[in-house]
Length: 108
Image 1 (cartoon, rainbow, N blue to C red):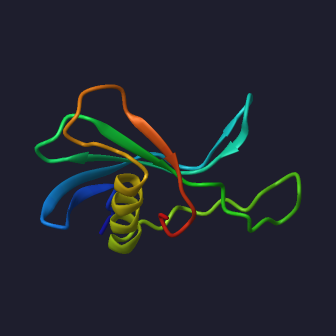
Image 2 (image 1 turned 30 degrees about the horizontal axis):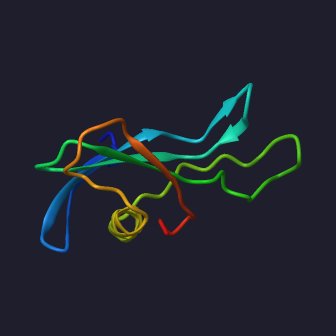
């Protein structure tokens, strides 16, 4: 049986439903070096999207070869991320380009 990871879903925070999806897993970028995971958020009835950008995990085997781990996404991380984005000024009902927020590993 093939096991699949859950890379998207719905979550309810403070009476509103939000759709989330993993947009980027940790990857090497020639311009920026290692980039961490990114999760997109959108209120189910809203228009404006928010991106939560996580830092690259710091566990490494050596300075030249970081230890790549698959990101662990759970309900707590997404819920904390929604609350942090709202506190930082994200307005899901407004129009415009997606807003990016840098967050820590807990989504804060």
